[in-house]
Amino acid sequence: MSGSTAFIVNPGEGHVIRGPAGGPATVKARTETTNGSFTLLEVSIGPKEGPPLHSHRREDEMWYILESNFRFIADDQIFVAEPGTFFFVPRQTAHCFQNLGDSPGKLLVMFTPSGMERFFEEHAELPAGPVDPDRYREIAHNSWMDVLGPPLGQLRPLD
Image 1 (cartoon, rainbow, N blue to C red):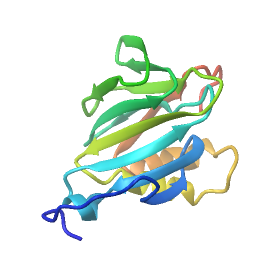
Image 2 (cartoon, helix red, strand yellow; image 1 turned 90 degrees about the vertical axis):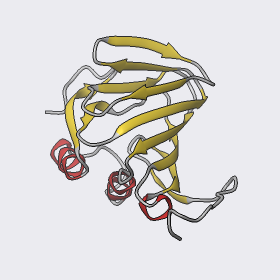
Image 3 (cartoon, helix red, strand yellow; image 1 turned 180 degrees about the vertical axis):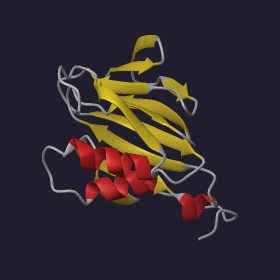
Image 4 (cartoon, helix red, strand yellow; image 1 turned 45 degrees about the horizontal axis):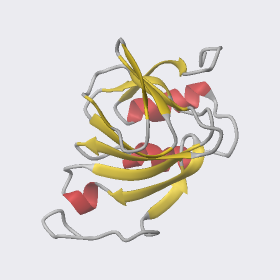
């Protein structure tokens, strides 16, 4: 399917993988279906979970919160967002977030241009459980992403 063709992804459809935060991530739109314009994922984030502080060298990132409340940090901005909130972070901006709830939260995550689905897919190939910080950084680096610090709420850095 080329990006110049309209397409639809119905509820329950898409490529389901294990996301970096342990919950399922469903790739709804990828490089091949959007002609490189964007990647769209539906991501489940476990309670109190979230990615490490990081930045993207080439992608802008956007979130639309579907379930739970999340704390976001972007550069020097810190805020709590509830379902229905949209958040945009331009490329090369340090950011991270955390599900504040006691149950899994759900987000739509969009990257533009496309390509970040490869990070999620490569990460999904790792064994379940704690990820070696050096391997995580390697996968991130190969996906134009730089890990800058630990996740929110984690006391020890990735080192």
